[in-house]
Image (cartoon, rainbow, N blue to C red):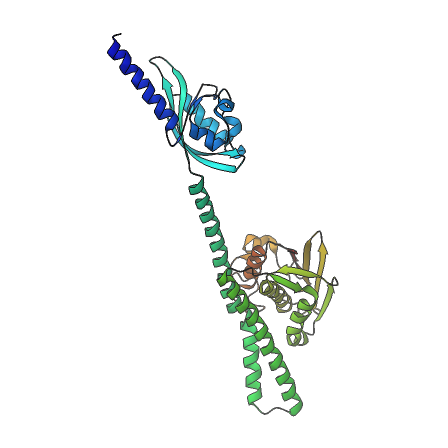
Length: 365
């Protein structure tokens, strides 16, 4: 080889070495077992290891556990002469870092000698994507909640408004003095109940629109008793009895409007779908166990055939006893959605002509 070609080869190798060591992205060379043969300064910066610590060590211990199998598969594909580009993540002392990696085989005329790699640190970009995904998920939850608010207004307000209109029309006629006082008392109670419901809903909507925490402490005993009192006229007309068994000083940190709406709907259904063949008995129990509050609403009404109803029980606009009572099929759908958004669970036991038991389990915080 003449001196000029030898000098050119030296210059070329020097240039490659300079590019390798000073490239702004992480450049590395792996042997066919996945051990580092060469690394530039950016590899050291990203991983937090010195060059001496990396050379001769496998890349696998650096990879985040959830990405190990995937990354190993990409390495194997590269060894089969299939260039790869993929995203992976590594664990460092400063936390998880995300990388956009390109691998391709380095080979001579007959065989693959090593795997060449380029990795770009995309941690900042990935973190923004993760934040955007979280925000999108949160936005969906808020939209779901706002849809629930709309349905609550459409469903829960129907009955008290209808009652108020009915009482107001009665007052337009000629009534005995004692009957008029009774109607006025019922009307006042109904309007007060509507006011409570509207304040709950308005407060919750306002909190959601400002992005603040929408949970608060709720006294379970007082709340359930107040809701039962809301139904006093329906209870009287049905000649029903409501039995309460609620643990003392039971508190729950939750979405107040949801909690109120759940109890209202379940008690309303228990009265609405009562049996005319026996005195109506509604039982409401609430107890605390292992940081969970269990609420049971039981009745001895007409019951349901859960086998035939199946998964449709909590779907929108499903009515299972339209001849017994009016309704728009939203009550149980709303209850199920509210329980879900509160992080709880709901289960149902029912038998035709025997009654129904709804059991709600909610976290206390």
